[in-house]
Length: 324
Image (cartoon, rainbow, N blue to C red; front, side, top):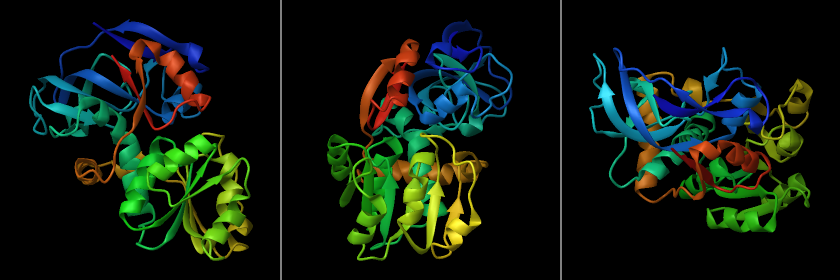
């Protein structure tokens, strides 16, 4: 038996229930892990509200965590009992103990602690595929990052700065502008007070950004499009402000033949090889100090309702961790 946060129906933070659940011995290809830290991500909100369906309820939500391997089943070769591991994206993370497919686990080096490991996997591997696969950023290119002070935004800003890009970060307050600048943004724009496209064009000498990495969604969609140079990339990887309902081809054509894509982490970690490739690049970037994971909020796992409320009302910055 273990404790876990489940939803019995879709809805607000009040639907998060602190339940007692069974955890069996691991079967073939499985491991049982005692979790020491659980990552909080906006996709958890989408799962809770039903925006992203997760199957028959009740379900344990959450998609990333770190912990210790307690037991393994047959035909497990990736890890052994006692290993420190982390994972993402695998549903069912909001639990003290869980079973998981061992092929989804990544061993953590000694120089990365458990809370950092739990906070970095989903956001960090998202940043990795955005910067290296979706639109490979080149040195000297101007790039735009929406919500640059958020969890993914901070990692993107640091990593893109290390790659030599000219990093322009959009934020919602002066306080968040300072955070974004400390994470490597060369320029910041207050999207609630400034004309974002005009400022981007000013910063880039009229050219526009090569790419906009936009995890905000509906509220910033047009500002992202209008900030791009001809043949620029609109990369919509989240929808914290609401989903982009339709993408009009004329909106792309009239702005100089723009590209639009809506990537996600799941396809980029679909095989063990792809998962290891992304995870290893992230572990290297964090281990070398090129990317620092800012854990600015911690909550007990049982306080997931409060954590979700803070996340949705934009009271958080950087990463948040739930402690079982």
